[in-house]
Image (cartoon, rainbow over all chains, first blue to last red):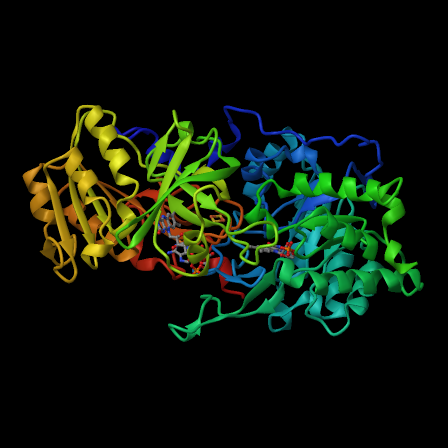
Length: 345
Length: 283
Ligand SMILES: Cc1cc2nc3c(=O)[nH]c(=O)nc-3n(C[C@H](O)[C@H](O)[C@H](O)COP(=O)(O)OP(=O)(O)OC[C@H]3O[C@@H](n4cnc5c(N)ncnc54)[C@H](O)[C@@H]3O)c2cc1C
Ligand SMILES: Cc1cc2nc3c(=O)[nH]c(=O)nc-3n(C[C@H](O)[C@H](O)[C@H](O)COP(=O)(O)O)c2cc1C
Ligand code: FES
């Protein structure tokens, strides 16, 4: 390997050594009165606390382990994985926008085989609980992915990212339509390990998110993750062309938080109303602090995901967990469960 | 790989440097981990800042005894304008050291450091290391104007072999760094070229160095959302040891790359033979 330039060849080893640290990462700081029960249930999975990473914002957990212990948070939701290696889109892939960003990554990834053989075991060995995000262009792709994940180490959930284009329907995203959303979730639920909950990740770019949520719950979803990014774009006034090579991209960050809170509130209200069975909601969209997380819990979320804010503060998931715990205690809640949907009273 | 730290750093020094600003940050624990070519990701504003993404800067100098790191930056847009407003005593949140640094030669070599504008920032510490290890260095420093050169005096303090170019001829030779570069490579019998600057310059320097049978290592500057390897915004097409081209993350696998492995002409496209390009067809 060495050609006189220490370890240069290692640059291409996909950061294999990222797990070998000289120092241990900081552990979560337990606040006094940390006795509050933060456990939360998604289907048959019991998470010790409700804070997770949002798909696409935490890789496969390894890089963030330099900043916090993956096992310290409820679960790591991994970058959406597809059946085969995918290059992703051309660069530029990002644009910073007020209190947020646009991304157009195009689901770059190594494909399910490399993921199951290399990335999943690493997280499991590190004690992390993994919710695997999957996507495909056809229902069959989702089925093959769920099948492949059977018995894989450390998997406590499958998140079906249905905000991806449906090849059979001229590339319209599955999540835009109750029937195609139903088809994917039904098929995944049928083949996935019965012990592993299936979550449907919903897009906010729909006329009625309640209709999509209901279709997913009827299809057997054990939980709903919401929201994915909003479609947006930016034009550079100097070049007078779109900033992103992909022209449009997904908007995320605190800028979208009010939209996300509204979505969670509406779906939770429809559940309380008896319009669909009550399943846990994983709320996300611009969560930056414990109070932001609390907002989602009050709207009806049983768990939360931290996404874009990780780019600003790579250790934010554990900070947000500590802040959420303190905020619940300060408001006199005896458990996380007691606060879920409290804004609906 | 050095473990990065996230710390609140105090600004302990600040001065103009031609068209740029030089900041000295007291960042406990970081300096001792820094190798030449590492970068620092600086948060803009506090917890309510509307600018969420950290800005990346090469680490110019690191002083473990004083617990300081230095950066040299240009006011390019909103975020760097905000940074330029900070004063001694203010603090910023930093994550460092990040990235793969420049590979150091195992034996004494003749090295040529080529930089455009503030791209020279990481080069002086690297040059000092090479000289301390018994090697020799020459510099070719270029910029659009004399104002935009950085550290010519620092280069001259290390070696007599310093060539300066400016696009407008306001200092040194008129033209680009690639003008005098072939002659310099021949004169010092260069074994290796280290380069940092704009993409076009790195491509041209790679060509010249390769023609002279010198190794060439380049530090690239790609837009980065996270800087820590989780978002996949910062990718470049790079040929792996197995001959397969992949989009690799310049924040962890770079920013320092073997220049001959980077597919410079294909940056910003999806080359048909890049791993996973076939899967993009459907959407
Ligand atoms: C590894 C690395 C090392 C760098 N070293 C230096 C240095 O030593 N000195 C220096 O002055 N600059 C350096 N840069 C460039 C510096 O990061 C940008 O100039 C800066 O991010 C611009 O921010 P802004 O808010 O002023 O501009 P804006 O245009 O408002 O920034 C908007 C967004 O685009 C990103 N962006 C814009 N321009 C660049 C760019 N050229 N490179 C990467 N991201 C960009 C920003 O990070 C931000 O997320 C480096 C970049 C990288 C990736
Ligand atoms: C860079 C980036 C990549 C993302 N990749 C994915 C992905 O692969 N799969 C997915 O379901 N969501 C993806 N998302 C969406 C997030 O998981 C999340 O739903 C959304 O960004 C809103 O949360 P946030 O504002 O906290 O980021 C991505 C978001 C960003 C910013
Ligand atoms: S900047 Fe996020 S992966 Fe490189």
